[in-house]
Structures are given as structure tokens and as C-alpha cells.
Image (cartoon, rainbow, N blue to C red; front, side, top):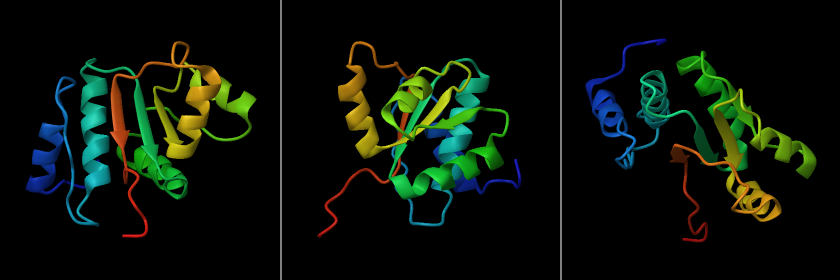
Length: 136
């Protein structure tokens, strides 16, 4: 790790480190929620409890997530789901990239295109900035 996490970040990691549990990281901006989520997924992958992760975020944040994953979990291959539909279909099926990063809109579109029965299954789901009413 590039630096030692704060004690409250360790607590967030522990809550997210059980594949049977759910965790909500709702700290203020800048307190390390991204690092906590990545640390939890890294620990779960290293322990063999999970093998695949779907990380969904707004489109402008995809590059940031790729950069943070490279910083905090450089040993885990990551692929961003983007491009034309035939390319996205291939990326969804890519077996050597256990972490897939997609935006909410493309996920909905690709789920319809591929179909629920043929869509890949994931052991862990991470939602960043879950869609909210932008007007309020």
C-alpha cells in the first residue's frame, strides 16, 4: 500500500470484507472511501472468497477508479467497459480481468443487449455514487 490507512479506514475495510455481508461507506468526501472499497475487494480476492467484481460508477469517474485500482491493487487486472456494443460484449466476457468497471447507463443497455441469462455473474458489487435525483 502506498501509505498506512487511518484507523477508521481499517474499520470500513473490516465491514466490507465478508462476501455474505453488505457494507455502506458513507463518509464525507475525501476520507478514503475509494481506498477502503479497493482494500476490501483486494483482501477478499486474495483470500479466495471472491473471484469477480463489478464496479459501477458515473462515466466521469471510470478513469479515476482505474487509477486508484492501479495504485491500491496493482496486481489485480481491471477492464473498463466502454466502446461500441460488440467491443463491450467482448469486454464483459474477458476472463483474465476479474474487475470490470462500468457506468450505470451502459450497464442497463448491456444487460438488455446481452440478456440476464447470458450476462456474467459477479461475486462482489461496488456502487459508487449511486444514482440520485440531481435536481434536489
